[in-house]
Image 1 (cartoon, helix red, strand yellow):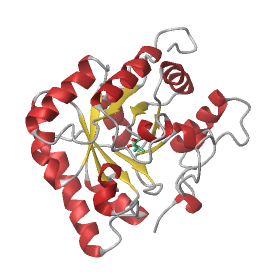
Image 2 (image 1 turned 30 degrees about the vertical axis):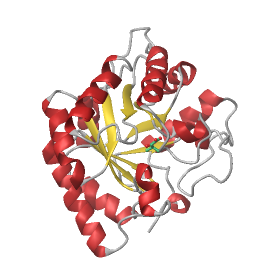
Image 3 (image 1 turned 90 degrees about the horizontal axis):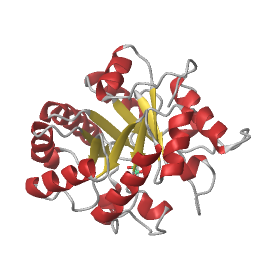
Image 4 (image 1 turned 120 degrees about the vertical axis):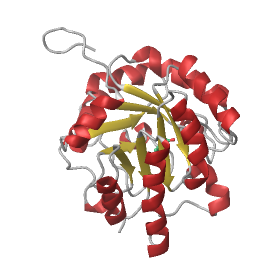
Length: 273
Ligand code: KIV
């Protein structure tokens, strides 16, 4: 990606994001699953591109993320990596690909070597501390995804807001701190009350990305198909169709990027209390 004076723009790294957090500046994150969209997101100024296992739903048409394999993640990550040059590339570790430390190390290395990931993301709190520690000690940047964890949907019995009861909220606050201590470079909060997300964001030094977690986090992430208004069925409360008022896909993504950075997204209608 080139700046106005035609110089290549520096790659976004974890240091860029940490400095932004310290300066009180928000950064943007959005999913992509192929090279064309990787390129458009990069052009629009998205800072972190997530190859999410949501591809199980939006690309493959499954009901959940559970059927997604390591081959799927590695393939789509490599496609996206080929299209982008500025953003940081975060890639999801799929269901059961990090059930043991050995599995996690082998599979995370694969996502970095074959898929071009700069950071891997895994779901889970306390139970994942040894995995986060092992990845971190081996030089693998990690995003720890807590709150609603879609890979556990069958265990949870559905998708619902997490951390509404005081005991669960207190546990999540501690969990975020423990994950940071274990070496997590980013915390991602999905579907938690805005007040809890604010507290966690203030409590940890690492950047916090939110989805359905209010406006107080350091960043927001959404699923690309949701913001383009092409998701089959109902879109979640926390999402917004940015095609409304945009003349092109690039413009819609630019509007999303700007709304995240100036704090106008999410607004009250997208937030859980
Ligand atoms: O898989 C995904 O796209 C995600 C985001 C929705 C956070 O994990």
